[in-house]
Length: 331
Image (cartoon, rainbow, N blue to C red; front, top):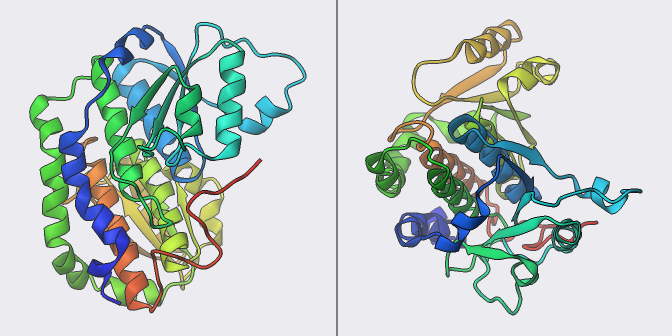
């Protein structure tokens, strides 16, 4: 199967254009007069909230908290969300638990902002109950694995950070779409030069390790390898990986080390030292273009393409993996 003929490749190839078209609603500004926000999301959308936490705390000085729906659904006492801002992330806007949890948080006084990729508002239950809805694009995502919607969620997070006075240069922001185009154009050469098919095929368990905003990319990369390529894979922060999970990796496994550039931080160097002790294969992956942390998006696209091409070479259908559906309903 030619990976360039898949729905996922079409979605990925569309990302630069969608970024260039994306605009935030100016009404958002009135909601951002806060020092504390709450984040809600599952799956890829949940991984996007990790990116938001790092970006908004590091670059904007905003305290960011995660919402766990189980706590909300089973709370024996009403929680006070008055004067608190909730960002609810959902690709479809139709996941029952996200919609219901958001409804409760709004009932408890929270201001609710939803971020979705569902332009049909009649089918977008989350948008219907929100104080403000941010639409990522007018291009629906059909394939099971969230690719363009995840990258667009990351871009929306950076755009919102700009409203909170994050010091990202206009030049670096405007280069994101071009950096992704260049990554897509050079991908086949990168894939072959690094012998990635054989490296992945011969590996049992696969780990992705990234620090800071790249922790979000690590988590979602592992999810895409599970969804598209049927490979057992997990994502970790560097510190979390060293606190136990590394013990399960051996000589037949593979760890991708995600770094903002060729220079490895001290904690990533520790990860490599420990992997060498265990004779575990590792591969360093860093953005081919762009400046950190904005180049996280190009890195995300690069790894999604790796999972996609490997899946197709392995005889799998990455657009419609067995046992999975586009909208996952959980409680």
